[in-house]
Length: 81
Image (tube, rainbow, N blue to C red; front, top):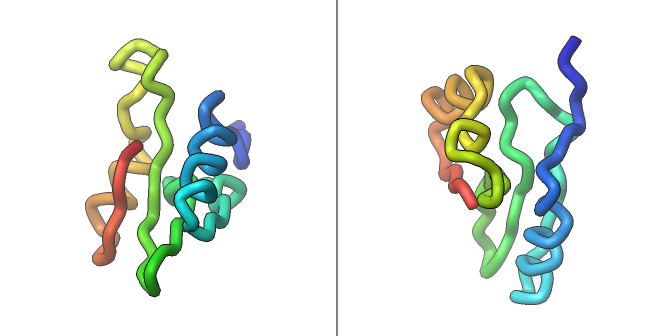
């Protein structure tokens, strides 16, 4: 069974870095189903952000099938950090 709300080990530090830059950040990780990890707002704009742990092997940094489907069908901006 898939565990919703799972986050990469660097999730907290990424959130803190965005906030230090003056961004507002909302964690979307509990949504699961391929939704990106964060909604990041700055200057009146919002961007969805998927967090991956760069210290893991490349194979562990790939989008899951649910994430890939989200990216392929979402008509707004999504970024990978």
